[in-house]
Image 1 (spheres, helix red, strand yellow):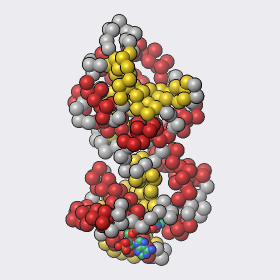
Image 2 (cartoon, helix red, strand yellow):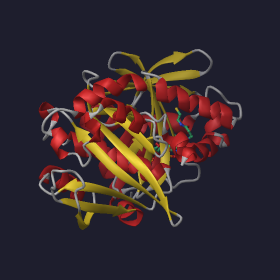
Image 3 (tube, rainbow, N blue to C red):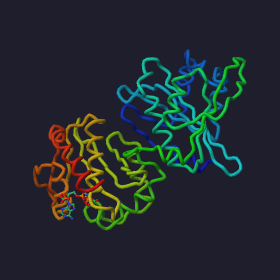
Image 4 (spheres, rainbow, N blue to C red):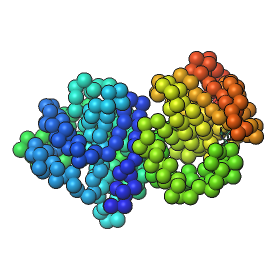
Length: 350
Ligand SMILES: CC(C)(COP(=O)(O)OP(=O)(O)OC[C@H]1O[C@@H](n2cnc3c(N)ncnc32)[C@H](O)[C@@H]1OP(=O)(O)O)[C@@H](O)C(=O)NCCC(=O)NCCS
């Protein structure tokens, strides 16, 4: 259990409108106050949380991780999402709990956004066989959200609190999650690091990188810690039918401007570069309020120069040390993205 939790505890998760990060001791009072809010307090299975000391003790449990849900715009804590792990008969499972505490943030699909990311994160980062959750029968919005994510109702559960309400036990197994999971671009998790390092150390990628040396796992992990903590470096993994196909890294260099680098899984088929670029550029322009993407490319990397030109990047200037500078504006992308989409479908068959 300790190993599972250590592997995931420091992962920064970003969605379109939210940031998810591990709860810290300094947040506990704030969370406690948030949990007491009506109607939230009446939608929880347990009533122990009304007492601050028992809440703090619960937080110290070893089989449990919880993350704060923050509104990216104003950094306000708006809810909590957590997983409690159980190992029974050699089968690992996790219980899902979540809430958005403020009315103002409800009915905006924010909880769906956070939970989709969380469920993917836990399935991808651990060996859990299934997720389960206990949902108050009359809490229709929560019930529907779970159904939308692929959970199915298994049985009624007795309420041990004096409220004596009706609850449903809901379950989502790994097979069904995998089948339903249509996520194409996501945060990088600790469990991805070994595979990404192999790609990064491939000769083709090293040859064109600023740092051409062979990267050790220790150094790679330091890079990962940097993207976890930095406010200006971001990296995402691009997938196709649950298969990992490439990485995009970017750094915010000025307000609304990023510098990117991209690489695909070595030996993948033609067109995969365009596929990972298409998804990454859409994400950068649509979700991150960016309006210019820059690239510094080694002049010997003709394939990458042609690749950038094929996406609509324009040559801007020569840089020192045999690098050239290319840019793609959001306005230009809006005009050409449908042509790229068409090429992906008809030319590359992706
Ligand atoms: C750059 C990279 C992402 C391109 O991916 P890819 O799958 O090879 O690219 P695609 O098959 O989607 O090709 C898109 C366009 O790129 C250009 N291109 C790709 N490979 C090329 C090559 N070997 N020579 C010349 N042009 C090439 C072509 O213009 C192509 O369009 P076309 O099919 O109409 O000819 C990939 O080669 C890679 O990961 N390289 C190593 C890392 C790297 O160089 N990253 C860029 C750092 S700035």
